[in-house]
Image (cartoon, rainbow, N blue to C red):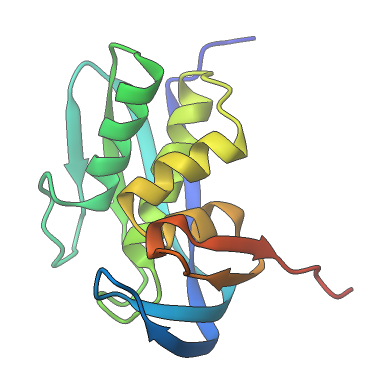
Length: 168
């Protein structure tokens, strides 16, 4: 099998179909029950092998710095796998910024999936979701896609995410 040098991953936005605040957790977060749906509004995430770690967001008002979820995902991936490698990440943003549609979380998920393919790390979905949960509460959903139920108790980072069957 030939070594990949570049991977493109589409990162779908999400809509909250239902969001119920069912309490307040000891850490101050809201205890939520949510139904989320991936939609066909995508960001395009292009990853290329590199010796460094670079992020480009052409035409976007979002800052390309170390607080960006895409960079956080890349750092988490390389730390977890122990790979001494880098990546150039280019994200073509289409999801409205700060609209609750998980654009940043989708980008982080796309980086995890893309790096897994680019470097042949063979991480399982469970491993990717565990890494993603450390980056943001919506990242595991963005990895799974489809329609999912989320129960945030006991904490938003350890919530129970279950995929709902799709209707044909």
